[in-house]
Length: 299
Image (cartoon, rainbow, N blue to C red; front, side, top):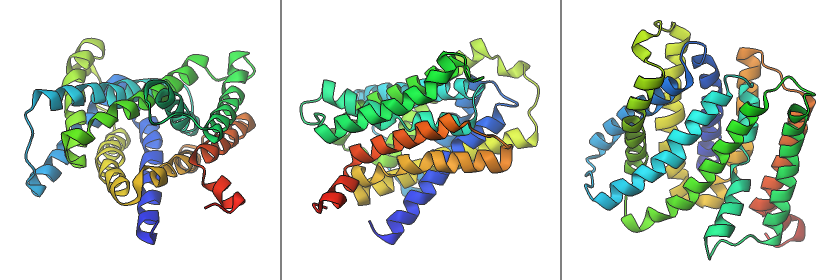
């Protein structure tokens, strides 16, 4: 990759790692579902302004919007709700580590449901190593050795599985010829529409106390920076450097989240969390394949 692409990758890792930090702050004043609505609603407004500035057309095909609706469910509504719910009980850094298991689940999903992305021996080894890391993370909580709710860990892992299925569904977008920014705006808009009645019934946000400035600023950062801007950078890297290079961001997101939550929130992780992160990182490296090629001289 070029130095510019590396800079964009690092920026994306900070933005997405920062999302776990922003969520942790915002949850002090807003319930999880209301926070999801704020994230996708404000993020959608920002991307709409970008689309208007670019002069892009808005497709009206029923197939386009049906595809976007499923993507919104798998890539926004379900995982955002689960992660935010989980973060009410676990540190931001731990949630980011669990989110890094997404490529592990993606390998399994692609192997089971596609004909052209079957798991190779290095990928299988990576998945097994990564899930060993998950066992290290979840095991102590399952047996009550750590004061970490098992349901919160399960929620974040379920979100990673949803992201994996969104990757499978995302293969349908290329034939539709949609621009990346429109795709991002479309799924955020559909998620916003779907979340409105859910939040109205469950949270009744008009009855909530007005949040303070730290919460408001965290919501704005989550929506404008970690959602709208992050999507623009994500698709730019995807277009110029490809999906394999983009996978590298998965290694960096937990580091950004842990640093931010440690510096500004005073959160501390147990040694088992770092051990699990190390194993997950080794698994991701095996799936990525570059270290193996470098070691064998085939890179």
